[in-house]
Picture 1 (cartoon, one colour):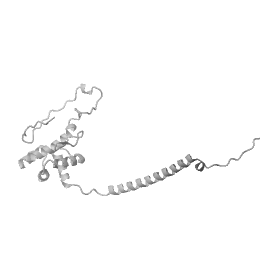
Picture 2 (cartoon, one colour):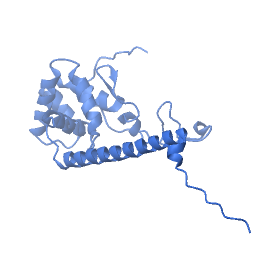
Picture 3 (tube, one colour):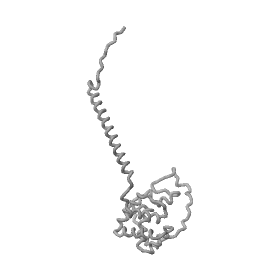
Picture 4 (cartoon, helix red, strand yellow):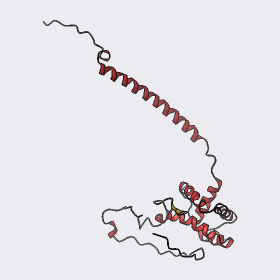
Length: 205
């Protein structure tokens, strides 16, 4: 029979320098994980507390701008984030724009208009300067451009009204050579211009 030999247990964490360093790193990792988790819980709790409170400090003029925009585009709702960006850029187009937008909102609040065309006609009759303001709004929402700067591209309304037939430039929603197929038929517009003719300006390219 072989005689059993007693092998004393060796603490590798003490005997090996590499093991000692590894053990120290593991302790630090556990501590960092614990601290990070506690910090994350604190941020989450703070975020929950903040989100539970009602939003305050909303700009009433921005809300009126959105209401005017919805009427001029004949849409029940518009993206408020895009609206805020457009509103800020349109205000930079001239010192009189803020007052003009407020008066345009007053006109909308003062009566009931069943369409964008009816409201635009009434606005120009009330003040011919409103035509330029309406142009700014429509250019912003449909082209995504305000005060000569591109505010939004893909979400511009000009792409939304033709999304069943035309895709935005640089976007391809079909397979290879999808453009060779016959596009769907689009009804010819039947409406007429609501505002008086404006001077034709050729934009630089």
